[in-house]
Length: 132
Image 1 (cartoon, rainbow, N blue to C red):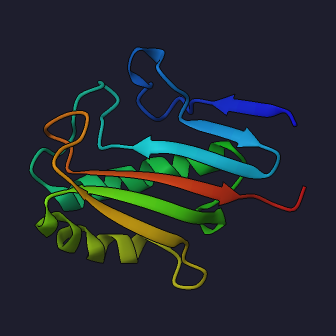
Image 2: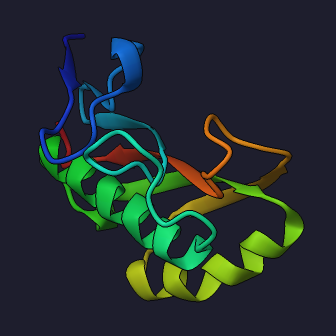
Image 3: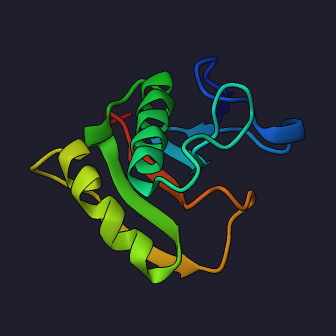
């Protein structure tokens, strides 16, 4: 099976080219954990988990679109949050951004920290696009 490696130009490049944002294998799309990183490579919205989750989901949407899909094609997410109170703070924005019908399966993991101390959230996703 052929694989396609995608780094959308409107998402900050992966640091030191360590990974690809998107790998498409057949009609399955794997999206690397998206963090609240601005195009300048720096953490965006330090201390504001709601603004961070909105940026993260905007990047997830760009990633799945680059592979030919939409947010509705996402079937699984894993969300990492720093501290137990962050989950409650991001929930309303997340519900607003996801489709009302057909929401993906979801796992949330509370962690002590992420790759940058200013990141409060990270979300990775799997999507299934079309029916190749």
